[in-house]
Length: 255
Ligand code: GCO
Image (cartoon, rainbow, N blue to C red):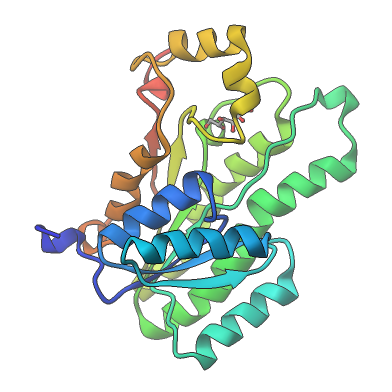
C-alpha cells in the first residue's frame, strides 16, 4: 500500500455476507489493503470455498459461519472472536436479500424477513462489534445501504424501508459512538452486476432503464465499491462520520 492513510495492515475486518457478490468484492479489497478478513456466510461449503480461494491469493482469512438473523449465533461468534484474541477493527454490514412483490400482495412474513436480514442484523452485529470497539476507543463500521436509502421504487418496499433505515441507523450509531472513536458510515451502491440483480439484468426493459437513467450509462461492477470501502475503513476517514457515499455512476445526482 503506497499511501499510509489507506493502509489496513494489522487490522481485522468482518464482512457479513462475503462468500459472494458485493461482500466478497469488498472483502478482497480490504485484504488487498492489508487487513485480515473474517468471511461470513450461511452456507458453510460456499464459505469454505471462498475462504480457500482468498487464502490462495495470499490473504489471511478466518471463517465465521452464521445467519445474520440469528442473534444467539452472532453473540456466540463474537464470544469466539474474543476467546481467539481476534479483535474486529472493521465491520462491514453487507449481508442482504431482495424480495420483489407489489405491496398489495406482500405478506407480512416476507416484509419481516427482509427487514430482519437487511436492517436488524446491522443493529445486532453493529452492537456486538461496537461494544468491543468503544472499549478499545477505535473502530470502523461500514453499513451497506442502497440507492433505496433515499429513493423509492415499486415492488421493493421492505428492501427500501430497510435501506432507508440503514442510512439513519448509521446516523444513530454516529450519535452514540463517534465520541468513543468509532466511525460509522454507509455506502449506497447503485445498480450493480450481482447474482441478486440477475433478474433485473436479464429484463431487457429494466436493463435499458438502468443504462438510460445512470449518467455513467452502465451497471456498476462489485469491485467498484472497494475504493469507498477502504476509505471508510481506514485512517483516511477518521473525521468522517454518519455519511452515506453513493457509488452509483451518478444516478442520485440527476432526475
Ligand atoms: C432492486 C435491486 C436493488 C438495487 C439496489 C440499487 O430490485 O431494486 O435488486 O438491489 O440493485 O438497491 O442500489
